[in-house]
Image (cartoon, rainbow, N blue to C red):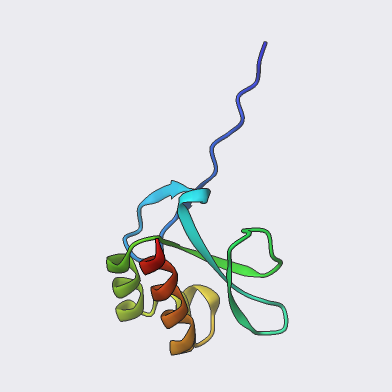
Length: 89
C-alpha cells in the first residue's frame, strides 16, 4: 500500500488562511535575534509565514502580526524587503 506524503499547511500572518508551505514566504528570528527572510524554508529560528501578496503584507504590517509572532520589533527594512520580493513575483 502506497503512503501519501502529508501536505504541510501553514497560516499566513496577514489573512490567516492556511496554505501549503511552498506558497508562502517565511520570515524568521534567528537564535542571535536577527530577523531574516528565509527563502529556503529550512533556516534555524522562530518562523512566521506570509502570503506572496501585497494585501496580506499590508494587513500584517498594520496589525503588527510579524512583531507578535517573532516576539520582537521587526524593522521597516524587513517589510521593504518583503514588499520588493512580492512585487518581483
